[in-house]
Amino acid sequence: MTAVTHTATLDRAQLEALVAEALDAARENGVDQAEAAASADTGLSATARFGDVEHLEYTNDRGLWVTVYRGSRKGSASTSDITPAAVREAVAKACSFARHTAEDPYAGLADADRMCTEPRDLDLDHPWTLDADAAIRLAIECESAGLSVDKRLNNSEGATVSTNRGARAYGNTHGFVGSYTKTSHSVTCVLLAGQDDEMQRDYYYTAARDPLDLESAEHVGREAARRTLARLGARKPKTAKAPVLFVPELARGFLGHLIGAISGGAQYRRASFLLDAAGETLFPAFVSIEERPHLPKGMASAAYDAEGVATVDRDIVRDGVLQGYVLGSYSARRLGLETTGNAGGTHNLIVPGNGGDLDSLRTEMGTGLVVEELIGHGVNPVTGDYSRGAVGHWVENGEIAYPVHELTIAGNLRDLYARIERIGDDQDLRGGLRCGSLLVGEMTLAGS
Image 1 (spheres, rainbow, N blue to C red):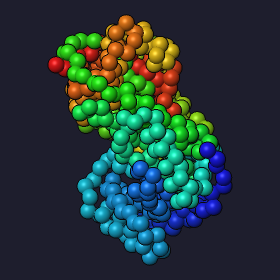
Image 2 (cartoon, rainbow, N blue to C red; image 1 turned 30 degrees about the horizontal axis):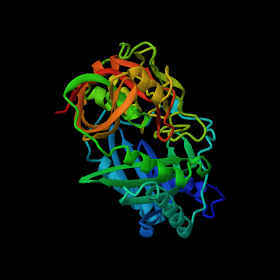
Image 3 (spheres, helix red, strand yellow; image 1 turned 30 degrees about the vertical axis):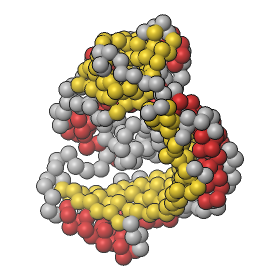
Image 4 (tube, one colour; image 1 turned 60 degrees about the vertical axis):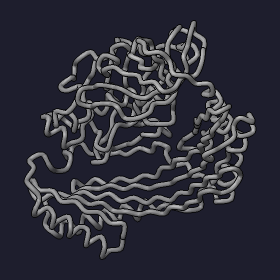
């Protein structure tokens, strides 16, 4: 896929000026502290189904958010109207709200000495000039490539091509101001296959900051076809205890429950299955989870967090031991700790592998379940109880025996994390948590 220069310019200087305008208005209202964020986004999305345009959308959004503090009282307001009068009105509303909210001794900006002083360029902006006609052609090409694989592919939910470019600016009354531009692009295809009275559905997608890093539309369609066809003939397995191998895109979600449990909000609310777990061994010794905020083109890269705090490399888990929590300034104060630069979330979590790819881990597993889709949201963040509907393939003697569906995999996350036996090096780079295939030694499988 070819990238060329984007014709539309998102003016960072304008957004910084908008933030400064809001902060000046807040100072005029006599607040003690204030922060403001502005954004601008343009995007195009085209969906084709059976060779025709099913959906075409262009987006062009702007917005401003402002928060003010009067002592320990906080008020917030937002507006999509960024005219000077609307900005002043939004600030006035925030100031009014701050007169009436309850006092909160933990409220306020992050400490001034934690601000990012030298924001770096993380190579996040790679525009893709794609007009509606070109996006539609790519979507049709993607779907057609998939449907042509096999006559059993007799239905489609379509192929979608999307591109987005955005600009962000943030500033506060500590004197910090920062801005950056970023892009994201994707191609997705969803197909259905029928055989006798059976119907199966699956999908595939590619996503990246840079369009040059996307897989081809043809490959996306054909991979969606392969995955869909592989589900035909699915059966319900017997109830058992067996090893479970998560494919990379599901492994990142499986570990993502850890991040929710160690977030500052879950900790200070005392609503986490990993309450006060810092310093405890949660995983086998080979497991580490590294936060690397400054990866070029990273899907979750950031020089500073949502409060302007400089982001830094750190290990959240090292040698199986939880090193600390995921904190913004508010939750850190509630816990008597320091912010970790994670207001707004984590920034590129990397889980190094100790094994090969999915095929080699499947061979090592011998007999068990490869999970390729999870259904439902049966995870209790307070107890760690985990129960999800699953679809995938049953494996015997290291080889795929048959596809399976209508089963549930279950356990307690704290126990399951300790049972991880292998993590592959086939990392999925399409999101903010990079993990390979993940083998858990034993889970409960509820089937027939």
